[in-house]
Length: 170
Ligand SMILES: CC(C)(COP(=O)(O)OP(=O)(O)OC[C@H]1O[C@@H](n2cnc3c(N)ncnc32)[C@H](O)[C@@H]1OP(=O)(O)O)[C@@H](O)C(=O)NCCC(=O)NCCS
Image (tube, rainbow, N blue to C red):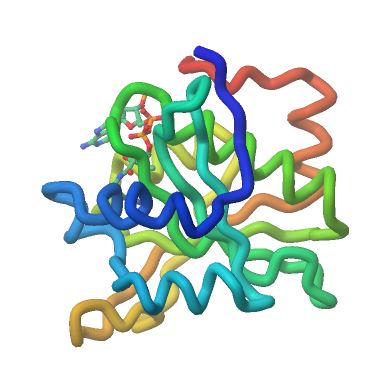
């Protein structure tokens, strides 16, 4: 695979919106309409990326508070078009590298529903640690849901990089 993580543009929104609307994803990931995406794409607090294989998009990741003064960045949303093939961890690993190489971030965190075992496994594979349950932190489809908080700190990323941790499956 000729994988690259690239900054998304408005032209990527149809792909992003189709991906977050894939069958079965509504239990795990939010979806925005085009107006909301356009607003976020061009505001100062979100950064949109698409993972491409050559020129074919395979997934997207939206970061929030990239390069913030607090040095904390959030993975707001991530999804791939074909799950369970290692694409998610490749995409996330590239986003993690981007955050720690290109900004001063100390902490990169992500919230997921505790029953999203596939996501948890992918996130652990690229260095995230489960920290605990954040009660009622997601307002999802009109319901206040708990989230599992996972995070990766800069020293942990540096350690992983030093030993050349493989992104590939273990
Ligand atoms: C979450 C997501 C980005 C992960 O990407 P992915 O490409 O599917 O993940 P990977 O293939 O890299 O890894 C998935 C791992 O979970 C495992 N897995 C799959 N289904 C599982 C399940 N039901 N329970 C436990 N593990 C599971 C896979 O075997 C794989 O682990 P392994 O390679 O060590 O065997 C992707 O699944 C996705 O887009 N999901 C829908 C949207 C979503 O949940 N987004 C995240 C919201 S926080």
